[in-house]
Length: 450
Image (cartoon, rainbow, N blue to C red):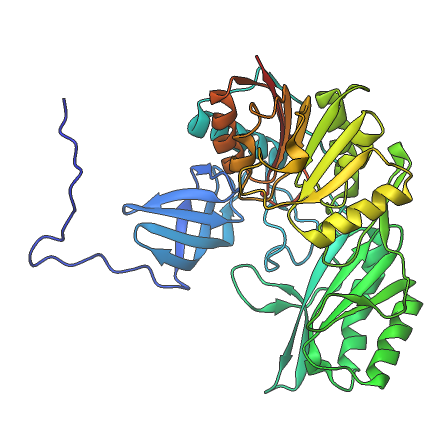
């Protein structure tokens, strides 16, 4: 048996470390394969290079963005021999903007990359494969994004306001005249926004701007100092011309410029309308969100006499459609203001069999008053750090079916292993392509207790 090397490694006496690869250095590379995040992988002189914008099999020239140890992070500078799979990016800013990293890759290849990442994480971290792989849930690859955050920075030396999106691997702001992934109602707002911000008497007071599209459009101005009456009038006139609501945020929560401005999105298949405010979590892709809710209901198969638990419920995106099908839904969320908003959504949609509670879901659940009485099924839609404490309680709560919606395959795999230990099997899993043109992976998994 080979001896394991578990000790510390020291530089030999009189030796010297290999010099670090300097930022900005250009290097010709042969890309061997893709990493899970879509970057190309190459190997040179004992170092592993991760190259944004590269495809497997390509010969490229890369520029170094940073290096640590034997790992070098770089970006494509020039294509010397392109892959047959490479396509022209739909956006003129794709090579500099930090928002999209996979526009050079066809949509089908992007989906296949995400499917492979999910399968690898489940296999490597949990030694697990579902009994059935579901077809990926996909929507339009462009014009899908109903929220956007616009970066704003006052250049005191140049006396200029920079407006746009953050550059890739940089704090620089790239001026953007159009963004192909934004939904159409936000496009004219994005084009006209820089000019109106630069015409303000106090443009240096603008921190950032957020755009929203639902049943109506909205513009949130985050300001770091009070805005004068003239600037408020300019912003209000701009929003009226764009048929959008104006919201303002200083040190407190966002407030509408005009009271009682409704902002909402619809789940048309269920006749539901969910109110929200800027700052609330809303799924960014309406088409995939609609398909995700429909698939969750199909997989979970809730019955009319069942009591169902919805954890990390947010505004009620799953809880309200569930309540239309079951005897009772208990919905739990960590943020009190979201609990209140969700309860208002239930009431405004005429649903009285869904009850919302606030709780820290990183703590054990079994002793909570709302957890008493058990549940037939549970739906979980946690943030990136997953739901480890919650899944540890599933068997104790009597749950026979667990529908897990994940925005991080790594924590999904970790939590899957915990469910497996409680006697659940992974019956079905698949990806949700919520963020086309990026390497971000969302997934859905159904666990059934044997």
